[in-house]
Length: 288
Image (cartoon, rainbow, N blue to C red; front, side, top):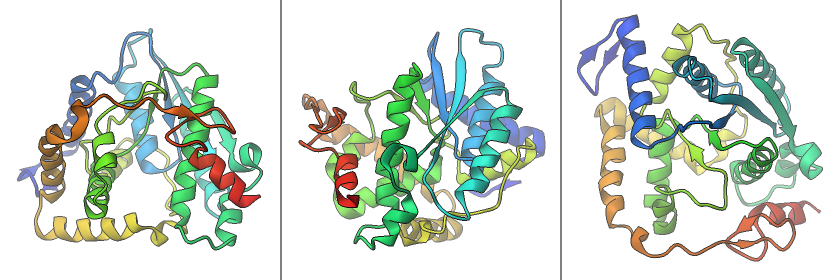
């Protein structure tokens, strides 16, 4: 494989080594894994989360003090989610971790398809992200999890940074850096690995994959930013890494030195919230 951004040409063995080196460095620099951790991998059944689960169980196979489980969420997307959830269960079984699956229908009484049918102004991804995070947070606490590992790769992180730049959302840009004590800590071991390389890694590792895509993804602003970034990266290799490194330098000037406001509790569900009613409960009220 040719890494255009680095100028390297890598054989299979050295490519795998390069990807795992980036992941180990990221975890080490940010102290992502600590002694005695019980880590839940947010497993969708796609290439990224499957590769993450494989990598964590491979890297820490000799650590008896660590425990890994997989949490999947069924949003209720017809013709799509059933396929990926079946694959997620197979992947968890293949790597010997406990698999837990929870659904929008059971937790909230409606599916994402039901939300989309209401034709709200916001893109489906907005609702999906809020409700999915609520389930993962709640179930992680019930399972006694100390960390939640998500499969956000370099592309995902850079898209988020650029979206917030475009929107001028300084508060969210600052929030990308830290952790809040009110929530189960999130870790992103794939943060420094391009999406394309995660996919190639998954193929080389023989991880079961399904080639399906969420039918609602193309409606989001993120999808537009993703296409734009991929085009710029194609013409100017290394752009994604440049955006990431630039943000990391810029973030030192963001108002993180100020005391962070403690979040209140939602009056409906008791979850940590910046407002009187949390976003998840607002969506539930909308659907009612």
